[in-house]
Image 1 (cartoon, rainbow, N blue to C red):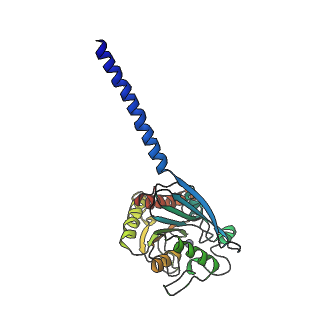
Image 2: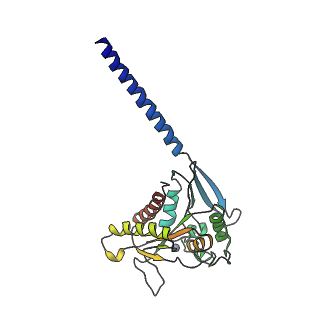
Length: 257
Ligand SMILES: [Zn+2]
């Protein structure tokens, strides 16, 4: 009897030790996974266009994703969502965020400042160069960090495409590539599933406009790129949620989040 009791208590003891070791190993591997560091850099430093670049790096190697907001200063969902993404932690790779690409335009709540549209200043071919101080600084980041995926957060005034004004409406515009198409369709499908009024559906479009950051990054540097355009007629919180959901779906798709 004594023997059986000893055996049982030994078993219980070993079980407790086992659980303890197991959870300690788990906690340790978890802390290894969560080892991310965030650094900030100023791009176009020393100029009136100076703006912040956030670099979130995981200790686990992986893809490089860049998320940009505020290319147009009157599209708040973009720069507000990007400002939230800068607080993310990731499982692997590198996440680069420029929340306010055109900081002066954001401060003035204007699409652009000084006449030229930043989203037409990027190279239109591999023989072209960025046209302005800020486009040059942003494009250098895409190049230097060897970005794999780029999401540029924008907004438009219409739900649907208006041919006469060139407005693309509520849409996801990707540069044609099989990998990009896969995640782009997934995002649009998941958004439209919850939209009850069909004219408010997101359109899945190809070919971001020539001279845009998304177009130049894809065409010149081979980056998987897309633009998400939310509609300013919707509430700001909904628009920010769409932008964040798309960013999260992209990061989830490549196992970074
Ligand atoms: Zn825009």
